[in-house]
Length: 239
Ligand code: GLP
Image (cartoon, rainbow, N blue to C red; front, side, top):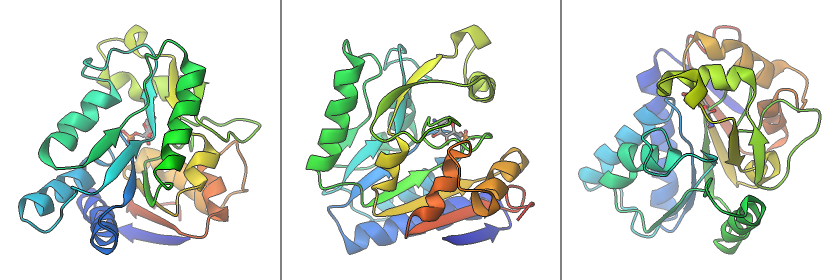
C-alpha cells in the first residue's frame, strides 16, 4: 500500500487524476471504477481539463460506479446518476457509463446483473474510492462480516448524517443504497483511495494502521496488492 500525504485537497485531486490519466494512456479501453461524494470532484475536474486539452480520450473506456441510493429518482439532483452526469460524464466522451439502478423493481436481480456486467467487461482496471467517516467504502458500512457481491445496504446513522448536507432535510436522505461489495471492490486490479479533511483523519489512521477488520471496511484494502492512498494534511494528520 502506497500512502501519499499532500499539502492540500487540490493536490490530492490532481494526483488521483494523474494515476487515472496514466491508466487510460496505458490502456485506452480501460474499465474504470468511479465514485461519488465531494472527494472525487477535483480529480474529475482535472480529467475534464485534460480531455478538453486533447490529452485524454475516453472513447474506448467504460465506467462502472460504485453505488447509488435506493428509491431516489435518477433525475433527483442528489442521485449518483445526476452527480456523475454533472461532475464528469457531460464533459467527456466515455464510451459507456454504468451506475447501479437503485429503482429497479427487483433489486436483488439488479445486484446480480451489475456484478455480471462488470465481469463481462473484464473486471475493473482502476477503482477510485472515497472513504466515509466511519471507514466505509462504496456504501459498505462497518459490519461484523465482509460483503462480497453488489448488494442492498442499510445506511448507518453516521452516513445519513454525513450525507444530509446534500438534501433539504434529514428525512429526505435515503436509508438504503445499492453498492458494490467489498469483494467486488477488491477484485479491481488497482485501487486509488482519496480523502480530504479532518473528519476523515481517524478513518484513514484506522485504515492504514488499525486491525484489518470489517468494522473498518477500508482496512481490508491492506490485503490488496495495488492500493494507493492519497490524502491531504488534514486527513493524514494522525498518520
Ligand atoms: C458516500 C459514498 C462514498 C463516499 C462517501 C464520502 O457515502 N457512497 O462512496 O466515499 O460518501 O463522501 P465525501 O467524499 O463527500 O466525504
